[in-house]
Length: 230
Image (spheres, rainbow, N blue to C red):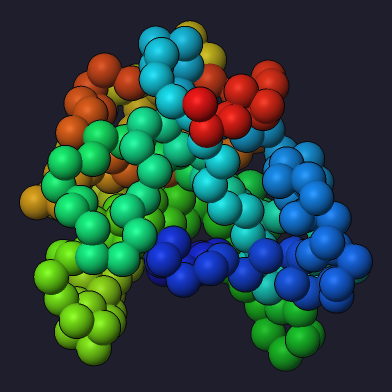
């Protein structure tokens, strides 16, 4: 079964609940960067206290859910370390880990009621993490047209890999989640690493570069205000 596509590469703004509910919601989000996170009906995960560096807010997005639920996000990211480069800036010197939290969603009707969306799974988290890594590490020397071609090709590959978490491209890795060992699927590439697994109430994906995945741990975030970019 293919992973449920609940988002796109992070360079392209995620479909956010605020964009579907007019200017009032958009203004509320602008006034309070945490508004989208607080609207979630699931816990957010980030790196545990073993990470002592900078923490920053990423993006919150929704899939195509029923119209009555459009205020509630389906996934979002929290960043650790260096923020993504903008434009053709040097990218290979940055050190970061981005944690993606994905809500557990059952099969549901699409917003336009013309079909159904598959249930989210660890593959959904792997897809979001993989596409996020691509958006953070695309070659800065490519012009816009070549960059889009590169992203399209690599995103298709990331999609195929996410759909085959038991395949040879992935290995097993056990990491702490809320202090308890939890199995993950893990892969490395020239761009960095990606992993995906489960946590209480949610699915977790993560991608990083110049930080060893073997040394990270995850925990439910008790205070989102710690992600203030400092």
